[in-house]
Amino acid sequence: MTTISSPDTGKVVLVPKPTIYNGNASEFNEWIMTVEVYLVVHAVKFTNDKVCSLAILAHMRGGSAGPWAKKITDERIKKDMKDWFSLDELRTQLIAVNITRRRREHGPGF
Image 1 (spheres, rainbow, N blue to C red):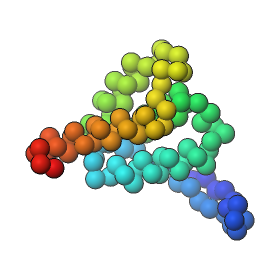
Image 2: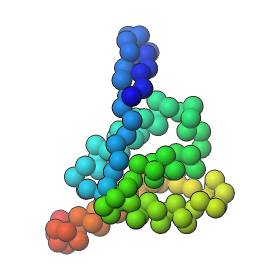
Image 3: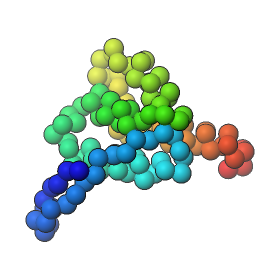
Image 4: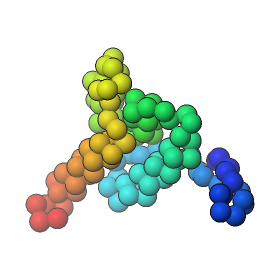
């Protein structure tokens, strides 16, 4: 867990490291919010899209998320940084994958 000082109060704020995401659609919104907060707090480490993408993909293992993350990583690992997702693009991709999965699990009316 990382501690930072709040700019408003100067109090120490705890920022947990993101958990591993396995593709469970009901956990997605909380997980992606935790990832986004972590990336903002550690912006000095996450200086470009490639680093951000790899950090996010590294937190996707098991279930349906693991194979998807591996496929994306394998496709892009050898490409220039310009070919990596921005945080917004990756979030959009993940949301689309989760919506598709929910529709498959719950039917087209979901």
